[in-house]
Length: 227
Ligand SMILES: O=C[C@H](O)[C@H](O)[C@H](O)COP(=O)(O)O
Image 1: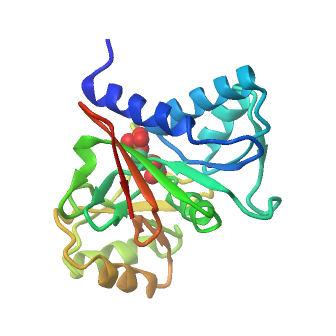
Image 2 (image 1 turned 60 degrees about the vertical axis):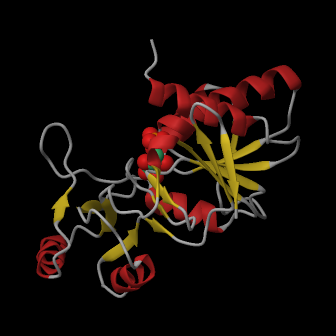
C-alpha cells in the first residue's frame, strides 16, 4: 500500500498531467513526484494521440520518458519550452523553493529558465512558512571542492559532501559534486543565493527564487497556489 505522502505526490503529479495540451513542448523535471506526472502524461499521449515533445532534466528522467515512449528533444533544439512540471524539496509562502534532492538542480534550473511557465508538484509536507529545513544542495566542481567545503564551514553553513550508499562522493550527471548545507531556516534566501553565486567553483545552488508560477500541493484536498 502507498504511504500518504506517496499518495499525495501521485495526486499532484497526475493532476499536473491534465494541464498538458496537444503540441506542447514540456519540461520534464526529476524525482518521485514527477514520475507520477510522466507516467500519466505517457498514458495521455498513447490514448489521446497527443503530440508532445519532452525536454528532460536528468539522465534518470530521460531513461524513464524513453521507456514510456515519450518523444524527447534537448533544451538547445527547441525554440522554447511551453511548460515545465517539476518537483521540489521545499516551498515557502513566497514561492521560494529548494531543489536538488535528486542532484538534478543544474539541468532543472536551465530547463526552468527556458520555460514560459513553471509548475511544481509537491505533497503538503513540503510546504512551509520559510525554507531551510531541507538541506540546501550546492553543485560544485570537484577540483578545489574540499577548499570550498572548508570555506562553507567557516561561514557556519554546516556543509557536507553528499555521498552514495557505498560512501563515495556522489557525482551529478555532469560529474560534479554536491555539497549539502544544513541550515534549518533560510531567512534571507536572496542574499544566500548571491553569496553562493560569487564563489568560483560553485556551479549552481538549489535555491529557486522567483522561478515558479504555480504550485500544486497534494494532500487531503488538492491545493493549487498561483503567484
Ligand atoms: O534534484 C531533484 C529535484 O529537485 C526533485 O524535483 C526534488 O528533489 C523533489 O523530488 P521528489 O519528488 O522525489 O521528492
